[in-house]
Length: 186
Image (cartoon, rainbow, N blue to C red; front, side):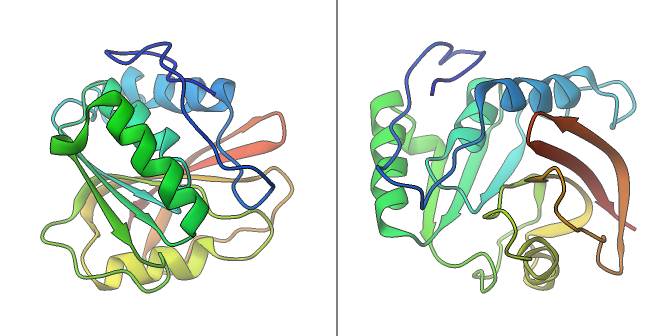
């Protein structure tokens, strides 16, 4: 696993052993960021430059670190699994990105209050556990998701998902076993 593009392009990322963490594959990450950078969901402009990005269910931090590599201003990671936290902190240190990142050792279903809403929320919850809907609601309730936030959610291709009340689906794409769902607060 590596950073696909931007200032950290080609840099490898660490992942813990076992199946507890399932990092987003390089191709899916490349597709997700191609959609974001192409501005298809934001009126033609990339929302990444200078953005505050939330990486919920961060795991190794691959999504948030890719966003940082491509121009995000700050990334906040929410992760609670100890092996993933260790890999995440190692990945941040290896990239020298400590000043541009914050790691919150918390559950995305019970997040701490936000200082301000994220411009972009990246979410990659464990597959087939039904965590996406309650996490979206929880993150909005404490201010991580605001009226102008753009949400990119990764699910298993066949996983059931209905946007919670107050969210609208902008686009959906399938890449191999993964499905990307882009949402905005309604």
